[in-house]
Length: 296
Image (cartoon, rainbow, N blue to C red; front, side, top):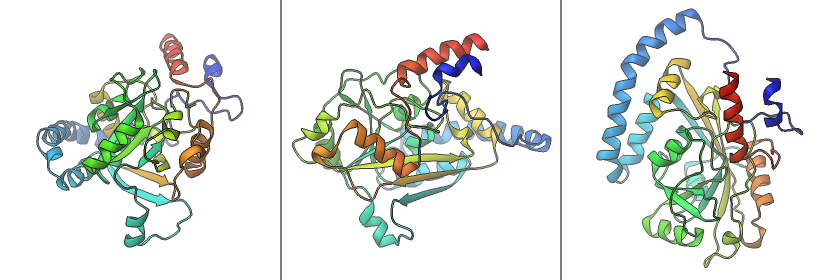
């Protein structure tokens, strides 16, 4: 691992691009049983996804239920949405705290499951920062696929104000994956490509809620690029079950208080994540992948 020391944060010791390994190796019995189950589950999941994109995504309310069904089929058995400063949240209070259409949720990015988890909760427009300082929108499939890529999101960008206006009219919340690329979830990558000026200059004030996603076991993370089929196969072969925790800030960032530093601090505070140095970004990930391939 000495070869990858330059891709480890000096202050925290976190190496955000290394794959997460099981803390406890699966037993021989688990391997024997999981493999046949994966053989059966894998083609069914392909059918489920096709059914969603061809039919169910166009049916309001049914689409969120169907995505929850897909998550259960992926062995994500429990998803916990919690709010900072709220110990026990009633259904009514939860509805009050939930982001409203046109609101922006800024989140870390861990795996393809992130997009499905958010979309299974409420209608969502996914957004990624572009290298030219704009913001590009994506559907569930494109957002999930970006977690398996090492390149910047390639789509025509727009300003965040126009995206928020359209999302409000369509009845969707915005989830902005500020890192632009997936990490192993052990720290927050630098937000170099996020144009915070647009948030301050928006025509209508934006409510920006910090959020952080975490998985147990952490092997659900996808810091290395791979095919979607390869990721599904690995997910089904590595564990009997997964849990997801999404922690959201109960108070939004607004107006001139929105800076790259305040965004980073808010996400790290909500998710109890470590803030990583400015040198660890998408470009650093691409350099890491070259070194990783050489080592292998």
